[in-house]
Amino acid sequence: AQSVSQHNHHVILSEAASLELGCNYSYGGTVNLFWYVQYPGQHLQLLLKYFSGDPLVKGIKGFEAEFIKSKFSFNLRKPSVQWSDTAEYFCAVRGLTGGGNKLTFGTGTQLKVEL
Amino acid sequence: DAGVIQSPRHEVTEMGQEVTLRCKPISGHNSLFWYRQTMMRGLELLIYFNNNVPIDDSGMPEDRFSAKMPNASFSTLKIQPSEPRDSAVYFCASSFGQESFNEQFFGPGTRLTVL
Image 1: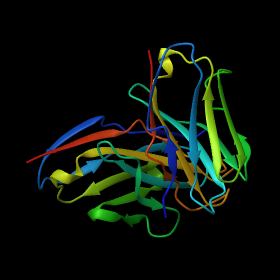
Image 2 (image 1 turned 180 degrees about the vertical axis):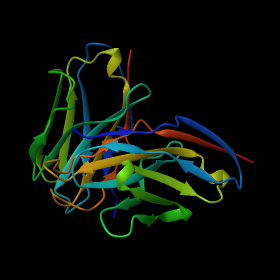
Image 3 (image 1 turned 60 degrees about the horizontal axis):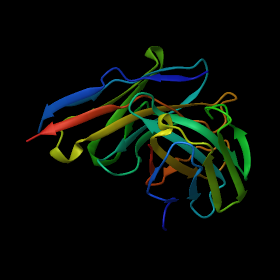
């Protein structure tokens, strides 16, 4: 079975600070990895995804994530956060060996960016 | 493109009542997912369909929950009888393809409160 662990449940940063949100997954085979964002009162939107190739993935709004296979990690980063980045961030994994189209989400990290 | 449509957006009901949540996936998408989001458990996959057929319902909490997809453009999630612990936000998502590398697009969610 696949699982996802997000270590930081709440993060508070000042504008222009750098961001790194941790994500570790558990799955023995090939995976697809995703980061979704949920802005206050809105539905989930895809930030970025990793399927194969370059392990450093660029997403929207200046976000990026790095897949480190040996560490089973897919941490989300942004060099300089903005107040508008205040949202909840979800890491998700899809195991490709018999996993079908099923995504397993982490419990989310609530990010608050202060002015 | 209207995106994934869910109705109602908010539902308040009393314990014991039947609740029906509705979802219209994006036209052309053939995979549909129902998720539940709570503070305690985060985002959980309840069930997903491919080509109107339920593929994985292992996340459905108990027999009080049922989901149907009578055609490619409509799905329902029914709770009968509802209980206060069912209070959550229920999201529907759709994507194209079963073994798909495409993202899941989420609807705005239905916020269910069971009194």
